[in-house]
Image (cartoon, rainbow, N blue to C red; front, side, top):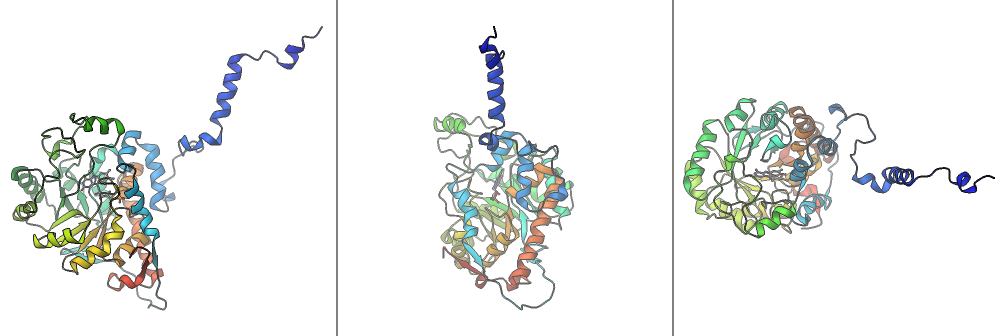
Length: 399
Ligand SMILES: Cc1cc2nc3c(=O)[nH]c(=O)nc-3n(C[C@H](O)[C@H](O)[C@H](O)COP(=O)(O)O)c2cc1C
């Protein structure tokens, strides 16, 4: 007699059932979003296949440690400001002029006495070794290869400034996180100037010191932060309950007068987001205002930088140039910022995607893509020079 249980169910063990279920779940599109974007490909795309800046991010994601990627992409709290920095570009329309001449489109300018082939710089970002072993040396080499783009070296860089300076011939600036008491600031700026920095950027906003819930909670409990400070930023003095790295925030406006005395090169203040503070900067002899909300990493529910750009431009009335960052990803973003009053823009995460994905060559390529996109956007808008770009080019939904 035939055993009907065997015919219908030939030796199905629990193990077979679980294996089948696991295979089904692994192949399910529901889980696809959790997976490595290159899972279905046998290779990482070649550098030449990168068409815009966004193409670099998944390559960076695939190549670096999860912790490094999280650190790079993180924004504070609910990331509202970080998202708004990007969304604000959607609220600015470009109104092209037609029959605007056939001369060459060119974007060179003079910025603080320096020749800028394109109105863009690499914004200061910390600890490039998390993204590539050649760290800031590779970033500087890539920036120099991309038409001598100036690189603003972070106070929290991995390598000493002398090593970064020696890596390439292009211009570089130095960014300082000021510390209480004049000695650290003076010594650090003297060292950077001796190594050849062409301008000094003083950052007066701050990155919230934690980017993971666990460390956040520990900081709220006033324990010392478990995130080690880079040695270049000076000694950590005490734990503090405010979620900002110790030593930052405790500034008076007289700090700028102090730094002014040490700076033999132009002094730029980074992190300004109101017209009133911009005016105060001018009173303290600053050479340029750097409008930034730290890429949404400082205080959530800050407005986007693009929204406050017209206010700052109105406050300054062209007396000093405005450097602008937070959210720039495309050439047309740069064009919009220029139209609303910026003289040049800083690129934060974009060159980091290039660095993490392809090292110095990635930095070069992503910069060249943005340069080409800017020229294309200027041509399409009928604004062939920087001087021809003004507010009549844009219609905003937030003014
Ligand atoms: C990973 C990372 C590290 C940063 N480190 C610094 C820093 O050391 N000093 C500083 O002034 N700003 C720092 N910033 C802020 C950038 O200079 C810049 O303001 C911001 O990245 C611009 O926003 P975006 O990345 O959306 O372009 C950092 C930003 C990121 C993403």
